[in-house]
Every structure is written in C-alpha cells, then in structure tokens.
Image 1: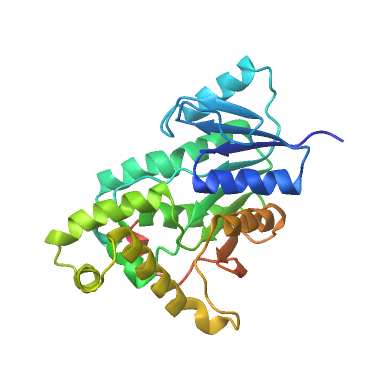
Image 2: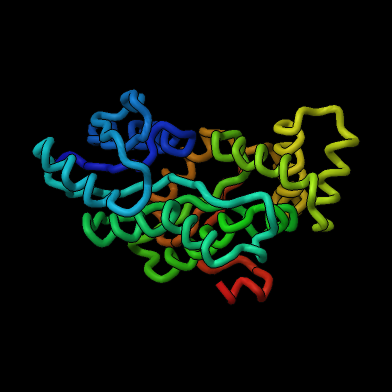
Length: 275
C-alpha cells in the first residue's frame, strides 16, 4: 500500500499540532510534511520546511523545497492553518485594503496550493464569525472566514472547512491584545458592552475575553444539545479533522463535545453580500 502524504501549513500552532496528532493516530504510516516560520523543526512531523510566511510565493517555495528533498507531491490532503488579519473592529467596517491583506495570508496561498499541488482534499479552518460578539470585533478576519466557507461550498468533495469554537492560541491572544487597545476609543455598542463587562470583572483581559466568547457560544448552541457546553480544546480540533477527512459534507463543526456537519452558509446579515 502506498504511503499517504499530508501537508500541514503552519504546523507549530495549535491547529497545526492538532492536525499532526490526528493524522498520526488515524494513519501511523503517513508521511507528514509541515511548514513553519520558526527556526525549530515542528514536533511530530516527518519533514519540516522552513522560512516563508503565508503570502505570495508560498506555493512555489514549497514545490521547490519538495524537489530539493526528492519528494514527488501526491498529497492525500493539504491542511491550511494560518490566520492573521486586521481585527478589533466590526466586520462590516473592513476596508478593501484590509480585506486584501488578510486574504493574502488566510486564503490566496491556499488557492495557489490547491491549484498547483492538486491534493485529494484541501482543508481550512473557520470560526463562528457571525455570532453577535464576533461581528463586533473580528474585522477583516471575518470576511476571510466567510470567503473560505463559500470556497468550500463550491466543491464540497474536494474542499473542507473545520469550524471550531474559541480556544486559546497565539491568534486568539493577538486578537485580545488588539481588542483591548481598540475598545478604549470605540463607539460600537457591542464593544462598549464588552468594555463595561471587562471593567466590572476581576479578570485579566485574556481570561475575560475567552470567558466572554465561551458565554456567547453557549448561548447560541446549548439549546440544541443535551450534553452541557464546554470550551473547545486542541483535542477537539483533532476530532474535527478526523471527521473532515472522511465527510461528504463540506463543513465540520466542533464545539467542545459537540460535533455536527453542514452543507450551507450560516444565516448571515445581508451586508455580507457586499464582500
């Protein structure tokens, strides 16, 4: 039997590590190649490719590195994890320039890799960008997640989205830092509510921010489940990938102990159509 190849873009982060853990458990003989912008080999990967951030030229750099390692790309799946963009303000206020810069990290390289390397599956990550609290601070990242959802729905047999609840990561920490700064000068009513709630709490902002997100997730979805809500962890992302690799549906959602599959966009405000 031919050894399966997987390519994990961004293997050192929470999503990347969860993906590698899943793949090693699901297919112990798999050959896992990963990329990182750090200077250290990615834990548990078979081959780490170093150096380039997820912008223009990433696909070419990966193909060149594979050739240098005498590897012919024949990937069962590419798993794309980078998430970096302008945040700290309402999604609806995202400017065209902010959106383009965010797509240049979060989506365009994924499209290039899909076209040039032609894996059996291309898998990306999304979030609950349409919940009330997220609409108020997710900025151009919300537009990128919306466009990734639409991308997956266009070809559900070849493209998958793993939608996950809020979990601690460098990305979430970055969002919290920016948000703490921008909410000091906001007039947005939802951000003003967040600011007031934080000032009334005895928590550090990172802890408050996570609790605030978890509270909104529970409010949005608990009524659909008998099992109680719990925050999402790295192991839940691994479960999401395990389902996505075999799912017919384009979107697999993991939220704590809960898992479900989707075949259409969530109910969104009409203004999303402008993007």
